[in-house]
Length: 283
Ligand code: SAH
Image 1 (cartoon, helix red, strand yellow):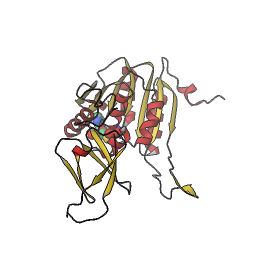
Image 2 (tube, protein in one colour):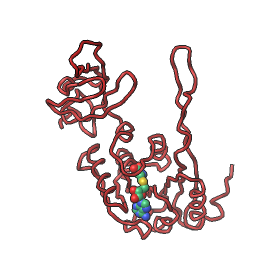
Image 3 (tube, rainbow, N blue to C red):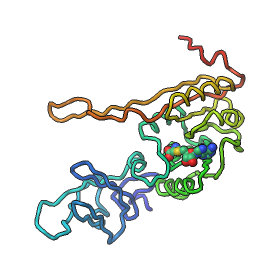
Image 4 (tube, protein in one colour):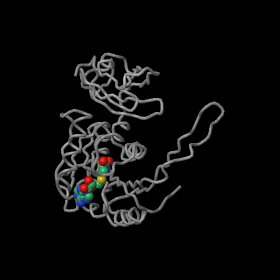
């Protein structure tokens, strides 16, 4: 794709053939489509011709034609390029993905930086992989399941193109990590404490381990194992994201929110064992 039509790295300019576009209806229902000449998008509200979108500026509205040919108010869709979060909630998944609110926190907690050498396990559908790649990291993934590995590769290629620095190996991270000199190890699997020893060897001093876990007892078990290894500055936290309803004078928190997704634990690889100092919080 040319610059004028937007690329995976720099999505700007008029909407171009081959790009993904998010269509949003008046009920905030969202549909992810890929623009192709001559194609049409069918929905409850009618048919949107892709040709009506190609060449339009992002943020345009398009009308849907009613399929039954009857007269009636034309339904309109807003067309924007999808954000990373839009893609993640819409993409095909085998495994549960990490929610965007947690992915954002992981970027900062893991201090992901351009060029960082990252090992990620398990890869699942690739939501965390996409986030780390977007932050400029070079990602090697270990994934047990061949079908998930394939899905993740496809999802990453769809978002970032086939050249993204992403490699997935079908293997069990509990058995070891071959890479050395890693800057970051990102874990989203049931027993991350079984990876601590491997991560200890694979990470550079000062490197960061991040684990995402649904249950606090798992986080406690991981923390105990980190305390026995050359890791310090361990922290465990969760992200509560509460959206607000803002309409005229009705300004209040939304009635519903996602109360629980997962706990994020981080720790730094240090030179010496730091079992005593690890838990002392000097203020
Ligand atoms: N973080 C991913 C989701 C990961 S789901 C995302 O955001 O999309 C957990 C994944 O870990 C599953 O795909 C599972 O197959 C994989 N897994 C579980 N144990 C593993 C192990 N020991 N080694 C490698 N992968 C493992």
